[in-house]
Amino acid sequence: MTADQVTQIMGEALYLIVVVSAPLLLVSLLVGLVVSVFQTVTSIHEQTLTFVPKIVSVFLTLMLLGNWMITKLTDYITLLWADFTKYIK
Image (cartoon, one colour):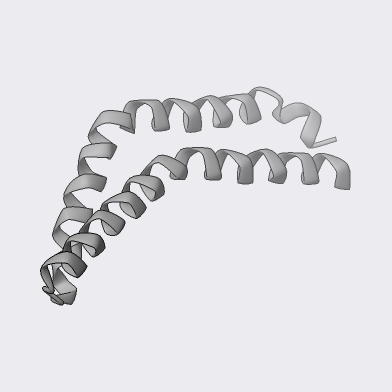
């Protein structure tokens, strides 16, 4: 296995991590922003108020996109294992 192959595999893996985690991070960011604006407008400065909406929104996003996320990860692992013989040379 050459250094170029390792670099390519790692690059694809890191790209896949970014693609799969982006929906969860974006939903969490948007919910946090909405809650922060709500806290600013209502002058409620409770720090624990942001946790429950974020947890619920991330859980709902996982329920909606979990199948897609697992499919992307499984496809990548299947691709790696299918070409396993060329990596052990």
